[in-house]
Length: 292
Image (cartoon, rainbow, N blue to C red; front, top):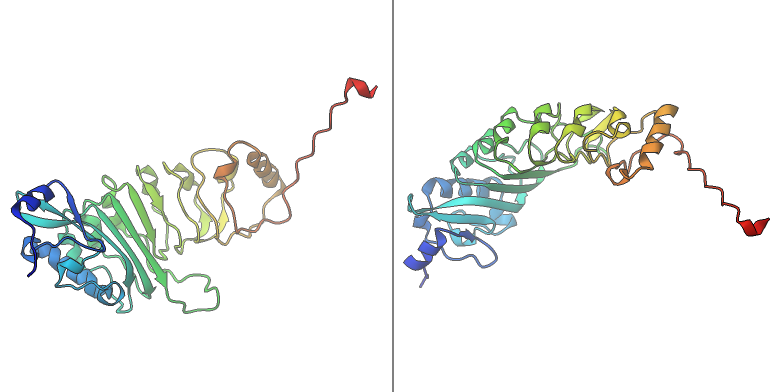
């Protein structure tokens, strides 16, 4: 016989989370808000989580990665967090619009493989999210390194709706176009790695309140004042496409900056600089009085 939570356990749940883990606690399906059940079921179907993670749309006890909380006023369990790390886009579907009904969700993490199309839907930006992480691994369609990436669309304008709530943001989805300058005003940790941004690294990336992660993008040129003026936060620009020509005066200033205490912030691993940075001349040993 299936064991359901007692009234006491439900009251306890009103101040705690039910996180579906390897052994999820049984929760009566009738106790979950219908709109939330539909949204989770749509996610499971869209990203083939029944095959990749063993989740079943109609069996809440299999919902590993879904966190539920009981709300006494509504007398329902509501979804407050989702973490799906084994999603697949082989069906070519994006985040379903029904996620807009997950009005209590604070954390949404989705890592998708086999991507061929955009993953985001603007519905996700209507939620009171404190954490949003959506990453995609795209199927190779070009040569060995497949560069440049094909852009999967620009950064959605509706992303700005999350400014007042989000604290951690990662969108790694081969997004192209421009990085919204408004993001520099957010009080959040922002990761825009593995996107299709190209051209010049904009100077305002140093104005972000926390160092911006732009690793694995496709920038081909940069404003060297990001490194030479010691202002703001230096972004992570590892593994971009920056084999740029650098003038001697920039090389000299860049070298001077690297020798300061700010060294850990300067990160150009994987980039190509012409020639070698000048070596620091060794100090001459002082002559001792015994040498006379």
